[in-house]
Amino acid sequence: MGIRIKSEVYQQWIESGSARRLLSLEAGWLREALADFHGHHLLYAGIDNTPRFLKRTRLRHCFRMAPGWARDSGCDARMQDDAWPLADESVDVVVLQHGLDLSARPHQMMREAARVLVPSGYVVVVGFSPMSVFGLLRRGFTLSSRLPWVVNCVSAPRLSDWLTLLDFRVESVTPVAHLWPLRLLSEGASRRFDRVLAGHSWVPANAYIMVARKTVAGVTPIQPRRWLMNPGFGMAVPAARVAGDTLPTINNQLPTD
Image 1 (cartoon, rainbow, N blue to C red):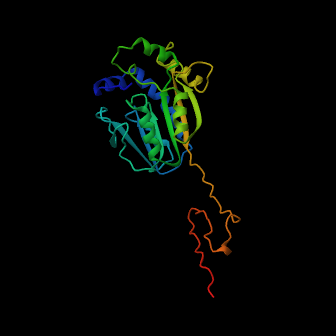
Image 2: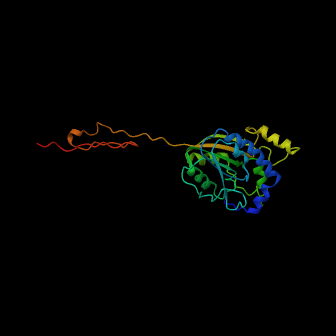
Image 3: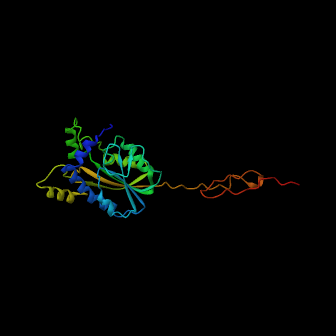
Protein backbone atom coordinates (compact mmCIF):
# COMPACT_ATOMS: atom_id res chain seq x y z
CA MET A 1 0.00 0.00 0.00
CA GLY A 2 1.42 3.35 -1.01
CA ILE A 3 1.93 6.15 1.49
CA ARG A 4 1.93 9.90 1.15
CA ILE A 5 4.20 11.92 3.39
CA LYS A 6 3.85 15.64 3.86
CA SER A 7 7.01 17.67 4.11
CA GLU A 8 5.94 19.40 7.32
CA VAL A 9 5.07 16.07 8.98
CA TYR A 10 8.50 14.69 8.07
CA GLN A 11 10.29 17.80 9.30
CA GLN A 12 8.40 17.78 12.59
CA TRP A 13 9.29 14.15 13.26
CA ILE A 14 12.94 14.36 12.22
CA GLU A 15 13.46 17.17 14.74
CA SER A 16 11.82 15.25 17.60
CA GLY A 17 13.80 13.70 20.44
CA SER A 18 12.76 10.19 19.41
CA ALA A 19 14.04 10.62 15.86
CA ARG A 20 17.31 12.22 17.03
CA ARG A 21 17.88 9.31 19.37
CA LEU A 22 17.27 6.83 16.55
CA LEU A 23 19.60 8.67 14.17
CA SER A 24 22.33 8.83 16.78
CA LEU A 25 22.15 5.09 17.39
CA GLU A 26 22.04 4.18 13.71
CA ALA A 27 24.91 6.51 12.86
CA GLY A 28 27.26 4.45 15.01
CA TRP A 29 26.09 1.16 13.55
CA LEU A 30 26.28 2.43 9.98
CA ARG A 31 29.76 3.79 10.57
CA GLU A 32 30.88 0.27 11.47
CA ALA A 33 29.01 -1.32 8.56
CA LEU A 34 30.65 1.03 6.02
CA ALA A 35 34.15 1.00 7.50
CA ASP A 36 35.63 -1.63 5.17
CA PHE A 37 34.02 -0.56 1.90
CA HIS A 38 36.19 0.84 -0.88
CA GLY A 39 35.37 2.48 -4.18
CA HIS A 40 34.57 5.77 -5.86
CA HIS A 41 30.90 6.66 -5.30
CA LEU A 42 28.50 6.17 -2.39
CA LEU A 43 24.84 7.09 -2.70
CA TYR A 44 22.92 7.88 0.47
CA ALA A 45 19.10 7.95 0.44
CA GLY A 46 17.72 8.13 3.94
CA ILE A 47 16.08 10.11 6.70
CA ASP A 48 19.21 11.78 8.08
CA ASN A 49 19.62 15.30 6.69
CA THR A 50 23.18 15.49 8.00
CA PRO A 51 24.71 11.98 7.83
CA ARG A 52 28.07 12.84 9.34
CA PHE A 53 29.08 9.19 9.54
CA LEU A 54 29.65 9.30 5.77
CA LYS A 55 32.79 11.35 6.39
CA ARG A 56 34.38 8.26 7.98
CA THR A 57 34.01 6.07 4.90
CA ARG A 58 36.88 5.21 2.58
CA LEU A 59 34.92 5.94 -0.58
CA ARG A 60 36.13 8.97 -2.51
CA HIS A 61 32.77 10.60 -3.20
CA CYS A 62 29.57 10.47 -1.11
CA PHE A 63 26.39 12.20 -2.24
CA ARG A 64 22.76 12.37 -1.09
CA MET A 65 19.49 11.98 -2.95
CA ALA A 66 16.09 12.77 -1.43
CA PRO A 67 12.45 12.39 -2.49
CA GLY A 68 10.51 15.40 -3.69
CA TRP A 69 8.54 15.81 -0.48
CA ALA A 70 11.70 16.16 1.68
CA ARG A 71 12.17 19.90 1.26
CA ASP A 72 15.18 21.80 2.59
CA SER A 73 17.09 18.57 3.11
CA GLY A 74 20.34 19.87 1.59
CA CYS A 75 20.51 16.94 -0.82
CA ASP A 76 22.55 16.81 -4.01
CA ALA A 77 19.70 15.56 -6.23
CA ARG A 78 16.00 14.76 -6.16
CA MET A 79 14.73 11.28 -6.87
CA GLN A 80 11.57 9.33 -7.55
CA ASP A 81 11.14 5.89 -6.04
CA ASP A 82 11.15 4.18 -9.42
CA ALA A 83 13.34 6.59 -11.42
CA TRP A 84 16.78 7.59 -10.16
CA PRO A 85 18.74 10.17 -12.19
CA LEU A 86 21.79 7.92 -12.39
CA ALA A 87 23.36 5.77 -15.09
CA ASP A 88 23.45 1.98 -14.92
CA GLU A 89 26.31 0.51 -12.86
CA SER A 90 27.61 3.92 -11.75
CA VAL A 91 27.66 3.60 -7.93
CA ASP A 92 29.77 1.38 -5.67
CA VAL A 93 27.67 1.52 -2.49
CA VAL A 94 24.01 2.42 -1.89
CA VAL A 95 22.80 3.22 1.64
CA LEU A 96 19.04 3.20 2.23
CA GLN A 97 18.46 4.37 5.80
CA HIS A 98 14.70 3.83 6.15
CA GLY A 99 14.39 4.82 2.51
CA LEU A 100 12.26 1.76 1.82
CA ASP A 101 10.11 2.44 4.88
CA LEU A 102 9.17 5.88 3.54
CA SER A 103 8.73 4.77 -0.05
CA ALA A 104 5.40 4.33 -1.79
CA ARG A 105 7.07 1.73 -4.04
CA PRO A 106 9.76 0.00 -1.97
CA HIS A 107 10.19 -2.86 -4.42
CA GLN A 108 10.76 -0.46 -7.31
CA MET A 109 13.24 1.49 -5.21
CA MET A 110 15.15 -1.71 -4.58
CA ARG A 111 15.21 -2.42 -8.31
CA GLU A 112 16.66 1.04 -8.97
CA ALA A 113 19.36 0.41 -6.37
CA ALA A 114 20.25 -2.83 -8.13
CA ARG A 115 20.36 -1.06 -11.49
CA VAL A 116 22.78 1.70 -10.49
CA LEU A 117 25.14 -0.56 -8.51
CA VAL A 118 28.30 -1.82 -10.16
CA PRO A 119 28.92 -5.58 -10.22
CA SER A 120 30.06 -6.68 -6.73
CA GLY A 121 28.74 -3.39 -5.31
CA TYR A 122 27.04 -3.25 -1.92
CA VAL A 123 23.65 -2.12 -0.69
CA VAL A 124 23.13 -1.32 3.00
CA VAL A 125 19.50 -1.16 4.11
CA VAL A 126 18.22 0.05 7.48
CA GLY A 127 14.57 -0.83 7.99
CA PHE A 128 11.91 -1.06 10.67
CA SER A 129 10.86 -4.55 11.68
CA PRO A 130 7.08 -5.17 11.64
CA MET A 131 7.40 -8.06 14.12
CA SER A 132 8.50 -5.94 17.07
CA VAL A 133 7.32 -3.57 19.78
CA PHE A 134 7.40 -0.82 17.18
CA GLY A 135 5.20 -2.94 14.93
CA LEU A 136 2.66 -3.43 17.70
CA LEU A 137 2.63 0.28 18.53
CA ARG A 138 2.21 1.08 14.84
CA ARG A 139 -0.96 -1.04 14.68
CA GLY A 140 -2.37 1.09 17.46
CA PHE A 141 -1.84 4.22 15.34
CA THR A 142 -3.49 2.86 12.19
CA LEU A 143 -5.45 6.05 11.60
CA SER A 144 -2.52 8.33 12.34
CA SER A 145 -0.96 10.54 9.67
CA ARG A 146 2.22 11.11 11.67
CA LEU A 147 5.65 9.64 11.36
CA PRO A 148 6.92 7.09 12.10
CA TRP A 149 3.52 5.36 12.31
CA VAL A 150 2.65 5.70 8.59
CA VAL A 151 5.75 3.89 7.31
CA ASN A 152 5.70 0.79 5.12
CA CYS A 153 7.68 -1.82 7.05
CA VAL A 154 9.54 -4.32 4.86
CA SER A 155 10.60 -7.25 7.00
CA ALA A 156 14.13 -8.63 6.77
CA PRO A 157 13.00 -12.03 5.35
CA ARG A 158 10.90 -10.32 2.70
CA LEU A 159 13.72 -7.96 1.73
CA SER A 160 16.11 -10.90 1.59
CA ASP A 161 13.80 -12.59 -0.93
CA TRP A 162 13.69 -9.43 -3.05
CA LEU A 163 17.47 -9.17 -3.05
CA THR A 164 17.88 -12.82 -4.01
CA LEU A 165 15.64 -12.30 -7.04
CA LEU A 166 17.74 -9.26 -7.98
CA ASP A 167 20.95 -11.34 -7.92
CA PHE A 168 22.23 -10.16 -4.55
CA ARG A 169 23.89 -12.22 -1.85
CA VAL A 170 22.92 -11.21 1.67
CA GLU A 171 26.13 -10.81 3.67
CA SER A 172 24.69 -9.97 7.10
CA VAL A 173 21.51 -9.02 8.96
CA THR A 174 22.01 -7.21 12.28
CA PRO A 175 19.04 -6.64 14.62
CA VAL A 176 19.21 -3.19 16.25
CA ALA A 177 17.11 -0.69 18.25
CA HIS A 178 15.66 -3.23 20.66
CA LEU A 179 14.33 -0.60 23.10
CA TRP A 180 13.55 2.36 20.86
CA PRO A 181 11.01 4.05 20.73
CA LEU A 182 10.45 3.20 24.39
CA ARG A 183 12.54 4.82 27.09
CA LEU A 184 14.28 3.21 30.05
CA LEU A 185 15.06 5.53 33.00
CA SER A 186 17.13 8.23 31.30
CA GLU A 187 18.02 9.02 27.70
CA GLY A 188 21.62 7.92 28.26
CA ALA A 189 20.55 4.62 29.82
CA SER A 190 18.19 3.97 26.92
CA ARG A 191 20.95 4.47 24.35
CA ARG A 192 23.38 2.25 26.26
CA PHE A 193 20.73 -0.46 26.46
CA ASP A 194 20.25 -0.41 22.68
CA ARG A 195 23.98 -0.40 22.00
CA VAL A 196 24.58 -3.41 24.25
CA LEU A 197 21.75 -5.46 22.69
CA ALA A 198 22.68 -4.63 19.08
CA GLY A 199 23.27 -7.83 17.14
CA HIS A 200 21.37 -10.08 19.55
CA SER A 201 18.31 -11.87 18.18
CA TRP A 202 16.98 -13.37 21.41
CA VAL A 203 15.10 -10.11 22.02
CA PRO A 204 12.81 -8.78 19.24
CA ALA A 205 14.47 -5.79 17.58
CA ASN A 206 12.60 -2.80 16.22
CA ALA A 207 14.96 -2.36 13.27
CA TYR A 208 17.65 -4.18 11.30
CA ILE A 209 20.68 -3.40 9.18
CA MET A 210 21.12 -5.62 6.13
CA VAL A 211 24.24 -5.71 3.97
CA ALA A 212 24.04 -7.40 0.57
CA ARG A 213 26.40 -7.68 -2.37
CA LYS A 214 25.47 -7.61 -6.03
CA THR A 215 26.60 -10.82 -7.69
CA VAL A 216 27.38 -11.51 -11.34
CA ALA A 217 26.34 -14.88 -12.71
CA GLY A 218 29.19 -16.79 -14.33
CA VAL A 219 28.82 -17.92 -17.92
CA THR A 220 30.39 -21.18 -19.07
CA PRO A 221 31.24 -21.05 -22.79
CA ILE A 222 29.93 -23.97 -24.85
CA GLN A 223 32.73 -25.64 -26.76
CA PRO A 224 32.16 -27.21 -30.20
CA ARG A 225 31.69 -30.97 -30.26
CA ARG A 226 34.12 -32.05 -32.93
CA TRP A 227 32.60 -35.45 -33.52
CA LEU A 228 29.28 -34.05 -34.75
CA MET A 229 30.54 -33.00 -38.17
CA ASN A 230 33.54 -33.93 -40.25
CA PRO A 231 35.08 -31.08 -42.23
CA GLY A 232 36.20 -33.58 -44.86
CA PHE A 233 32.65 -33.93 -46.13
CA GLY A 234 32.53 -30.28 -47.12
CA MET A 235 29.98 -29.29 -44.47
CA ALA A 236 30.17 -26.41 -42.02
CA VAL A 237 31.63 -27.23 -38.64
CA PRO A 238 29.35 -26.18 -35.75
CA ALA A 239 31.13 -23.87 -33.33
CA ALA A 240 30.27 -21.79 -30.28
CA ARG A 241 31.27 -18.20 -29.93
CA VAL A 242 33.37 -17.51 -26.85
CA ALA A 243 33.13 -14.03 -25.37
CA GLY A 244 35.94 -11.84 -26.69
CA ASP A 245 37.01 -14.34 -29.40
CA THR A 246 36.52 -14.30 -33.15
CA LEU A 247 35.16 -17.33 -34.95
CA PRO A 248 37.75 -18.96 -37.19
CA THR A 249 37.31 -18.87 -40.96
CA ILE A 250 36.86 -22.34 -42.41
CA ASN A 251 37.28 -23.21 -46.05
CA ASN A 252 34.37 -25.53 -46.84
CA GLN A 253 34.75 -25.69 -50.65
CA LEU A 254 35.01 -29.12 -52.24
CA PRO A 255 38.25 -29.87 -54.03
CA THR A 256 38.13 -29.38 -57.79
CA ASP A 257 39.85 -31.49 -60.38
